[in-house]
Image 1: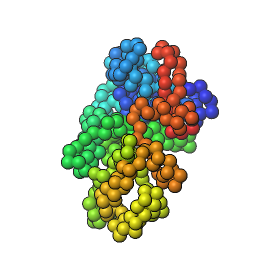
Image 2 (image 1 turned 90 degrees about the vertical axis):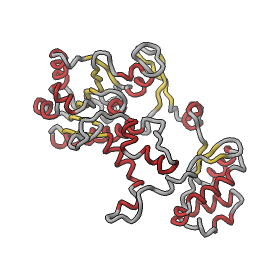
Image 3 (image 1 turned 30 degrees about the vertical axis):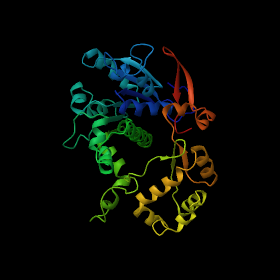
Image 4 (image 1 turned 180 degrees about the vertical axis):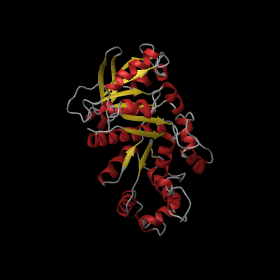
Length: 356
């Protein structure tokens, strides 16, 4: 729990009845902004307590990564004493956030109508797999399932001929960002009106919307002006490019970028190639463009490319693995990885946030 009174949510109390990653990451973000987050766990605790390396049982790495800035208590909501204790906490809370499926939270007696009737000023956050007013409402959902249902895995099928899952819990984490934004917006509304709000955030709808920002493409029009799928992103040649000693990621975007890139690469004639002379033409011939870029990138070392393209103000970056991140010059210079003395786990390292 942060005690920094200058943080924007300092003094806001959040009851966190969430498990796994979608809910815990959303409430962790609130804690990063200064909220007093009380994590409510059933007997046995959040299942992710037992995932990953640990110094003590029930305090695994994954749990620590998604539950900083929180205090935890155990309540058995199948017993009257546990429910009574939660109601007492609710009377003093600003937000109640859960990711229990709708029919189950109703059976426990903590549905939105009941909670807002007793606590009319509370922000009630229901974090679900699917919106509860649709035919999928109430289904169980986890990251792998939502990556498939939202079309994320299908992008790999479109590009590579076989669906794949992104090796990150991208559905949980992306939906958590949306949920934390919604909860903060609901709190701002309460500051204006004095009234509590029911805010529902669902993974499926959130990830479909997230996916279609770019991939709705020609179907954004009615009737459609083309097929769905952002062609540049679906190119098999959009990938880290091999250099003489490793890999590099580049994205010359504008005409100026590409002219400078070809000149640096010693292939200035490519700047006037009729296939690549404008952004629309490059989009139409994206596979050929990336193939030609890949040929010249293979001729120099990664460090040389990064230096040359950075000097020319062309977006470029080396390809880091997880170990490389700990040695990254920029991250170390800004103190991104912080050591923290945990009350039971000793010294742990936590990454900073994107905002300051």
